[in-house]
View 1 (cartoon, rainbow, N blue to C red):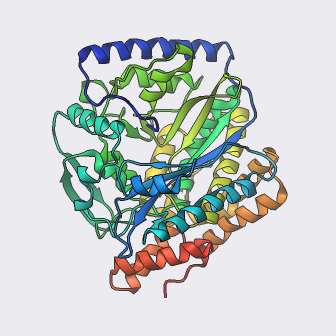
View 2 (spheres, one colour):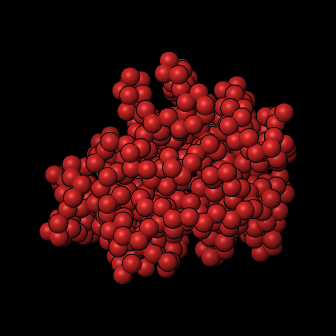
Length: 478
């Protein structure tokens, strides 16, 4: 969904033409994968991080158009709401000092973003859900002025036959309400990790990423509050799933095939299974005909951008035009700091590579249904959760991190050829977070308990801590 479109209203013929092109491109990708004609390049890492613009009162500041125009940064772009922005990295080979390089990239971008916001009497904040956000902020007047967002809103509501979006999240507290547009999606801001993969391991790594999602969502939890209510440790997960709830054919939004979901299964034989499921089960939302050759997969990529698995396969291209497969891991929240973000990336790539190697050697260590259950348990309870791991036993997540997951991540990074300094530096950030049992969610919850539910001051202190550059494990709540 990163690409702009030219239309916002469509007729039946638009859908028919798009569907035919989508069919042709899906078939072509299937043939290329079967013929091993996709890229075999070694892994390449990258990320997208979404952030908030806030005013001096820590409230959402809907100025992204002016902010981005005057910032004029090639790696910065608009998001759904006028108070959201996104920053990208440049693709970096996943080896040697990759995390030092990504750290430098993100720190440079973030410093420029922060300094520019200051000139506008504003701030930028990386956090899963802004604690000062109100439901009234999420209105169409605050939608970014882009065709793709207006069209997305119209088509999602059409698919729902005009029914309002119903939110029902039961956590520490219970929140239920209705909303009339897709702006709820903008309440959730993420740190999305990308990895370009050699074709021969793409589906194995995708499956490993599914298994790694439970420890990742707990480790990175940073969204415990929505509209003043304490919900899940990572409330982005149920909120996003419900905010764009629109299912497959026959309106099966409550069934196993949903546009925002954990997915329906592992890729059993090939990554093409995900793209085939996209074609078979999901109606086209944005039927904008692309003036491009079939080999560009423009219709397939646009359609894929309207289906939000927490682990999403993508199609891209090498510099020489050879198509490649990437996996986008969407479970982590944005924040709490630059170094935390890069440490999260290091842990994800290392753990997932290690699990991928195990899958290739021995097969899946967990049934898909268990990996899925683990994910939602971890999103709800964060570092307080228990999950079923490879030995079939229920384990406390902090214990599992200390006894197994950190060493798995280290082994995975070693097999990728990451240098010892980077491994030690960034995994130590994770180790300290587990030792102190303080991620972004835990810090926010503790602050609120100690300061009489003052969300404005909490956000101000969160931002102050974020701007020190120190990892969240060291943040005080006093």
